[in-house]
Amino acid sequence: MSKLSDLAVGLLLLAPAAVPAAPAAPEAPVTVIRAGTLIDGKSAAPRRGQVIVVRGNRIESVGDAAAARIPEGAKVVDLSRATVMPGLIDCHTHIFLQGEDPAEGGYDVQLLKQGLAFRAARATVSVRRALEQGFTTIRDVETEGAGYGDVGIKQAIEKGYIPGPRMFVVTRAISSTGGYNLEDYAPEVVVPKGAQIVDGPVEARKAVREQLEQGADWIKIYVTHRSWVDKQGNLFSQPTFTLEEIKAIVDEAHGWGKKVACHGYNGVGLQRGLDGGCDSIEHGLELTDANVAQMVKQGTWLVPTMSPYYDHWAPEGTPEGARDRKRAEVHGPSLQKAMKAGVKIAFGTDVGGFSWNDPIAREFSRLIEFGMTPLAAIQSATVRAAELLGMSGEIGVVAPGAYADIVAVSGDPLADVKVLGNVGFVMKDGKVYRDEIR
Ligand SMILES: [Zn+2]
Image (cartoon, rainbow, N blue to C red; front, side, top):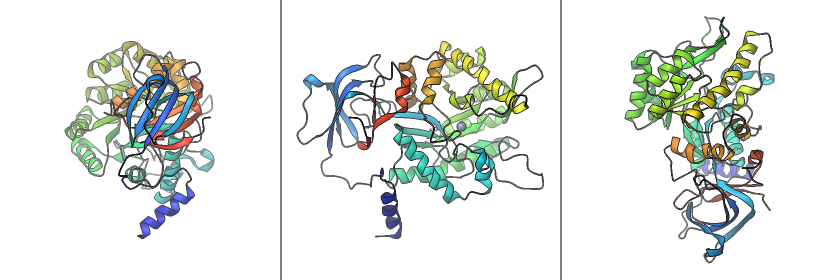
C-alpha cells in the first residue's frame, strides 16, 4: 500500500461520514426507498406513497407503493413518514471561504497568513457540511486565492477519500487590475489577489485557457467590483472589463463548450456582461427592465444569492453601512422584476461568504419572502439548477435514469420551507451519508 493510501485510510478514520471508494461490485446493490410524499423536482404537485428503486448509483424506477415490486435482497429504507426530494443543488458556493470572521482577521488573513494545506483542510469540512445539509451538488465559484484547490477537493470526493457533493468548479476566477481584493495596502507592497487579474482581450483569453487546462468546469468573471451609494442616493458599481475583454472570455469558454458565470451588481458593468454573452448573472442586485428583457431574450440565468445581503451590515452612518443597506433595499425588487419577466432563476447562496455552520437552506425563506412559491423555490435548487449545469435528467430529479441523489425531511416543505434546514436523510450517488429519519 502506498503512502498516499495510508493517508487516505487515516482520513477515513477521522471522518465517520466518509465512504471509501468501493471496488466495482459484480452486481450493483439495490436499495428501495419508501417515500411518504415525493416532490420529484419536475412534477407540478407532490405524490403520496411512492417507491423508489435504486440500483447502484442510478434510480431504476419510481412508482406507486401499491403496485411496486420489491426486488429480492434489496435494502429497504423507510421514509414513509417523510417528504423525499432530489438532492439539493447550490449554484453559488465558496468552499475555500469560511465566513470571513472579523475576529479571526477577516478575508485578508486567509491570503496573507493561511497556507494552502490549512485552507484545503477547512475546505474538506465545507464540502462535508454541504452534503450533510442535503446539497448533493454544488457549483463552487472561486477559490479566493487558493489557486486550483477546488479541483483537488473535487478529485478527493470523486475518488472517495472524503465525503462531499458533486462539484462543478471555476478555479481562480478572473477580474481586471483594480477589480479585486486584496486592496488598500501600501503601493510598494505586492500582495496576492483573490482572483486572476488580467487586462486586454489577449490576457483574458489566455487566463480562460489556463483555467480550463487545469480543470475548470465553468469560468467565473467579475463584471463589477466595488460598489457605493452615489450623491443621488443610487447604488453605483465599478465596472471591471471592457466589452471587448468579456467577449474574448466568453468566446474562448464557449469554444471549449464551457459557460461563464458573471458576478455583476448593476450599471454599465452588468450591461457589458449581458452584451458580452455571460451565461449567468450572479447576484444581479439591481436589474433594470431592459436588463431583464435582454436576459429573457438571451436565455441568461440569474443566481440571486439573496441571504448574504441581509446581515453583517457595516455600522449605520458610514459609507459602507449605507452601501450595505442600499444593496438589500434594491435586491428584493430586482428579483421580483426578474421573476415577473420570466428570467430563468437558479438557487445559489454564496455560502462561505457566511459560515458553513449557518443553514444553507435559509436562502429558501428569502426567495419565498420576495414572492417565489415554495415549489418554485425547491425547483430552483433541483430541476432548474440541473438545467443551468447542463445536467437535466441526471440530477435535480427523482426519475428513472437519474443519479441516485435523494434527500428527505420530516414535515412538509411546501407548507413550511424551514424544514429544509433540517435534512435528515442524504443519499448521493446511491450511497447513504445520513439516515436519521425515523
Ligand atoms: Zn460569491
